[in-house]
Image (cartoon, rainbow, N blue to C red; front, side, top):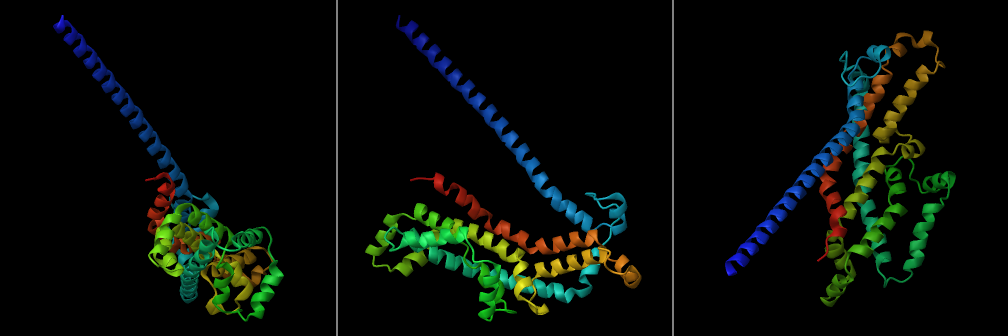
Amino acid sequence: MAAHIDSQTQTIESTGQTSKTESNNYSNRISGLANFLLVVMFTVLSIVCLYPLLLVIAVSFTDEHTIITSGYNIFPKVFSTFAYEYLFQDAEKIFRGYGVSIVVTVIGTIVSLLLTALFAYPISRKDMPYRNFLSFVVFFTMLFAGGLVPWYLTYSAAGLKDTLAALIIPHLVAPFNVIIMRTFFANTIPVSLIESAKIDRAGELRIFAQIVMPLSLPVLATIGLFQTLVYWNDWFTSSVFISNDKLVSLQYLMYKVIYNIQYLNSGLVDTSVAGEAAAAIPKETVQMAMAIIGIGPIIFVYPLLQKYFVKGLTIGAIKG
């Protein structure tokens, strides 16, 4: 009798183990299929995102006459570097524009991050006096602006025309960035950590510099990328405040080149006077070449900040 019970028990246990094994195999098959579909999906998305960039690069290295007759192609039918040769006929202006854009972007982004954090951290603290009023002021400026004319008159009266400060100061503090950083501080920095630091007789400045800022690298990287793109792509501020060619940013320099080419093609210029010089200007390919020149350095910013974006995505999902 006991032997019969033991045999039934072993049968049940073996059946259970078999069902668990089958369940695990089924889960592995589902997991493998899901991973395969995710890889395929992101591969397709990557190709879709990269295709326009590759097309711009290909067009910039294509002969102008081929573009006119055959249109755009991902592979240049007739390879040509004439667009880049045309742009770098005045290479000094391009490199000077690079220098201005890099200086403005680096200084502006660093100072912007510091000022945004110094504003966002106090209004994220519940013990901060008038924090609601200051938050309302930030939100109000998102909805209403003073207008272009007062903006221009204010900076002109401050003596900022034809200075690099005119390219940096207007974008230093963005209300949307302040709200994002305030929300991060309020939801991520534990109050108990700040209180324990105060018990250890740490001042507010030390708490901000040695505790809050190191824990805020994900949001700092995100806001830093936003500000980097704003400063690097800004051409309008140069058009308003800068008349000195030595202080023109790269983006505004490219804008002027495109505008001049469009003006020559508009029919307002006497072709008999412009003659062969206007006909020799690469119209389509030079625009693509300028796009490549303009986006070159900014591409290297993304790999440097990628790990902080990943951490920012997962920071709210980890508890312990």
